[in-house]
Image 1 (tube, rainbow, N blue to C red):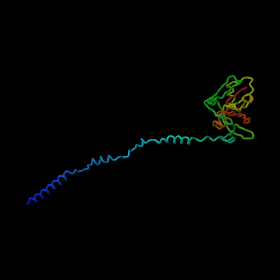
Image 2: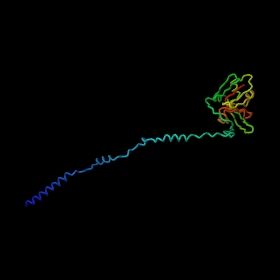
Image 3: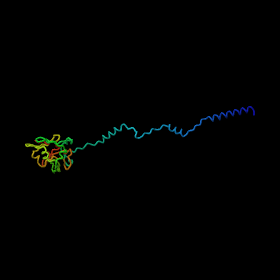
Image 4: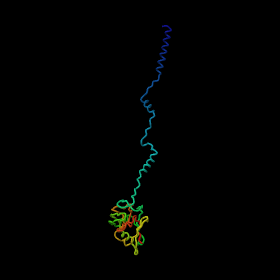
Length: 230
């Protein structure tokens, strides 16, 4: 083999060794299961929100309050004058009464002034009578009235000798009627609290009204607050 050929072979061997060294030094990339998991974990995820941790809408409370205001009960419809309500005709202007503070006062020419609560009045011995409430030229209301004989209440106060009249005055003192003492002790005079077994509504004189049998309806004082003997 000549020198030239030896040199040529030497160069080839050197190049071959260089290629082998270069190939053996190339980095090997291996993606393991763990690295794949780490890669996946590195991807940003949308934060999950527990329903219990949701932020309230600041306008919700106001909306609920507005809804409650809208849901308020409608105002009571007031029956018209002379219309029939609970079996009786409507007359007069209703008087608002705080029943806890209410007292029926009997005063004037009596031995003792008395003040009775609504419950104390109803605790007295009551009777029921059939009577006609007659407002001449307008209407007649017929039915059963329940209450305390006026005589019973006058006897509790003790009417003095010489008394001549008994006045019946509404709670707000806007209306009153008088009758002779003798008539006040007569039959058919009742401090009533029920009509047909039902307490009067505010339109019919709650809590008490006078029943004056055989007398015109103007004597049947509603919203009775004071009985005054003179």
